[in-house]
Length: 420
Image 1 (tube, helix red, strand yellow):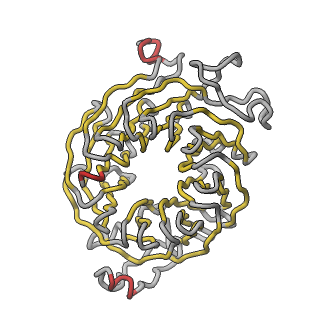
Image 2 (cartoon, helix red, strand yellow):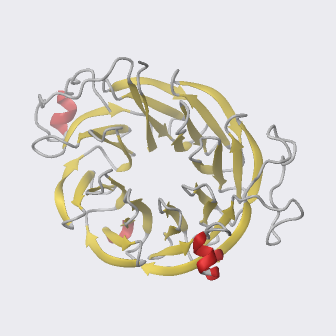
Image 3 (cartoon, helix red, strand yellow):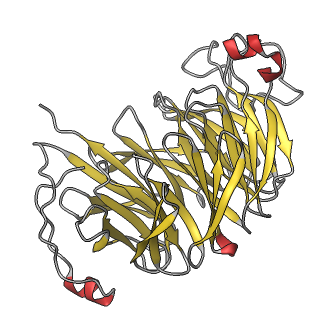
């Protein structure tokens, strides 16, 4: 992420948060035409705030559906998507124009959306209808509905595109769907493939939709999901208790691993890991070696070794840790403390705190700018976004605050390089 010029400090906001005056270290210079925006879902005002990260200012506010919640960006095209929980829809935002260009109906109380690595399919968990919508992003419409457990909260697709993992909060279970081609005859495992539109979609009768592959119980309040970058394991936070479930994901039937060990051909639960009380979010290191679990009611962070499936340590952080995010170089963990109005920086290699930064009220969702020069935190109770400089010579500091809407609860970033 680049800067055309250093934005002016907002003196009043910084003074109120006990942050000193403007830092004069320049931002990187942007190439011609470079644009980068943050999109913030404001559930209390039925809007998405668009923040210009080149000039550090609010660009505009988009009206969407009722109670917008989960956001995602398309990795292959200039689009972002917001789930409207109260309306049962998904709004499509053209990030080149910063306009809402389509609205896709889904089902009751959707909360989360995930997009596959090819940018062609999206998956939306519908908590109020115990289902997952499969969306064709080219056609901008739902092409299938998968039956899930009770109150599914998240549906996350694996990086290799072979598995869809769904956490069912109400039934305390995890559903895993396979994306591989299946015989056309009948349902898999006695569960209907989908209801509604199936064979008549624009992709023709050869379209492959997920089929239920496995279900695992014993994860009360199943919520956040982390899938390793090599797609071999999934970890699910059991927020109704004090554990994280580890599940092995089945590789392709003709893979070398299965040929060498046929027992790997099916999904299977590996462990239930004891962490702190009310684990709500899992932050994965980019290299896949560790997961950091935010334990909201224990005021702690648990570190999980993803190779041995063991909790290596649990550290007290601050009041109500709710989110974590790891830098691309795997060195640092940033932790949003919902109850302390602050963000802590944790050294992963040294396992020690590197200090903290004051924010607005109740920081929750976080996102890095493209080059990680800035960390953005949506402040749920003050209706703004804290912009933190991550690479200042004096350590991280709050640089400015940008306005959002009421009750911001998610944030994503989309960078669009300039044309040569």
